[in-house]
Amino acid sequence: MSIAMPAPNQDVIARGPQIVAALQAVLPADAVIHDPQETRAYECDALTAYRCPPLAVVLPRTTAQVAAIMRLCNDMGVPVVPRGAGTSLAGGALPTADCVILGTMRLRDVLEIDTDNRFIRVQSGITNLAVSAELESHGFFYAPDPSSQLACTIAGNIAMNSGGAHCLKYGVTTNNLMGATVVLSTGEIVEMGGPEAGPDGLDMLGLFCGSEGQLGVVTEAILRILPRPEGARPVLIGFGDAEVAGECVANIIRSGVIPVAIEYMDEPCLRAVESFAKAGYPTCNAVLIVEVEGSADEIADQIARIREIADALNPVEFRESRNADEAAKIWKGRKSAFGAMGKLGDYICLDGTVPVGQLPYTLRRIGELSREHGLEVANVFHAGDGNMHPLILFNANQPGDLARAEAFGNDILRLCVEVGGCLTGEHGVGIEKRDLMSTQYAPDDLAIQMEIKDLFDPQWLLNAAKVFPLQASAAHRGRAAE
Ligand SMILES: Cc1cc2nc3c(=O)[nH]c(=O)nc-3n(C[C@H](O)[C@H](O)[C@H](O)COP(=O)(O)OP(=O)(O)OC[C@H]3O[C@@H](n4cnc5c(N)ncnc54)[C@H](O)[C@@H]3O)c2cc1C
Image (cartoon, rainbow, N blue to C red; front, side, top):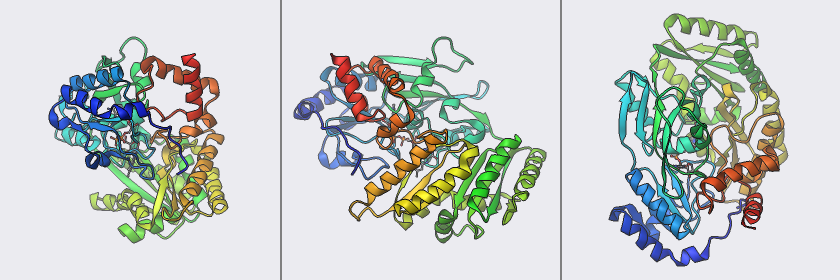
């Protein structure tokens, strides 16, 4: 394990029974879990290499209950880690031994659907997929579609500013979030934004979206909804050269065509996917899946333009889907890519983002770094917005292999920043990229971010030890206490 966590507060741990009793006094009996056998279920998120059972878990059903928990933890000086479904790949929901996990998964009601004004109001623990399922009969959908959408919650999506394959055209969570109800560390309930076009005042919603549980607990959300498009069609383009595929992505974006999605898979990924999902992909070094949508004429026009761009780069294959079955077949391999890689062994999934024009160079450098570190890497990612997901394969049973994989991952993330990109496109910082934040931000920039946390969470009880480099945050809090 190479990512350090601070020592837990022993005073809080010693007061465990008292803290649990106080929580039981303000919540229904089934909403407080403290049996170590049961709290183990919450000991990690999807960054499973890091685990730590929490002091207790609380599962409120209402905003008022969340407010009561926050007030109590604030008064008793107890750290709180908000949690949705625990699918964070960055360790964002990892507990500490002295913390209360505040799970919002029981807050899952749909409160209002307004198709005239195009919004849905939900409790934040509803899953992403359940939102679009609710909207289907109304002819609407919610655009951000993380691959984890069956499990992940809207709260987690807001905290991580999540994206997905279809965010190239519609934007990520922040572009589709209209309002939120947030409980602050003191238990105060605050409404941000709203269904009206442009609320006055500072953009608090923009500040909270992507704040990774550092500033407050989201309990309700107002989400922008969109009418379902008339039709959508993916094409598959195979290339003999991985860098040329990257060039094709840059050329499509430069041309002004805006597909809904451009997904990229390289040869190691294609090999894994073919033996796992038998999707019938061509044998080549890279495949792009480009999906366009609109009326039949709009779709035909966009596909013709994409074909022209691809043909100039001599693709191995250009496959158009002509019906729903063929479309599903094209997507099948991409959708099972993470599962297919999991069959090959342990992996860590990175999330750096680069300017689209830098994709060919970045892919070449990742290949070189893979040889230098002696570890295999597969690339599968949202290429249209340069959001890369290199999957680094390693053997968790081999001592030292995880640390080697993490060192390789850090080199890739530094490369992303070097070429003008950033550490995270959608998975967030969590613990995974926490200590790399100073690669991207100057000390003054980080200090401003920490001062904002001071304002909302003066005791640093909310999801501390995430996002900000440990040394920098310790020094900052030391100075603030002087
Ligand atoms: C197989 C797989 C595929 C994935 N694909 C994608 C993808 O395509 N796009 C993408 O963006 N992500 C993806 N992810 C990452 C993950 O699903 C997202 O980050 C998701 O938004 C996390 O939601 P969650 O409900 O699981 O949140 P959790 O993992 O429980 O928490 C994530 C963060 O949100 C905070 N948080 C949770 N609830 C609240 C709340 N109520 N208030 C304030 N903060 C809160 C937590 O403290 C933590 O920091 C993938 C993960 C997996 C395992």
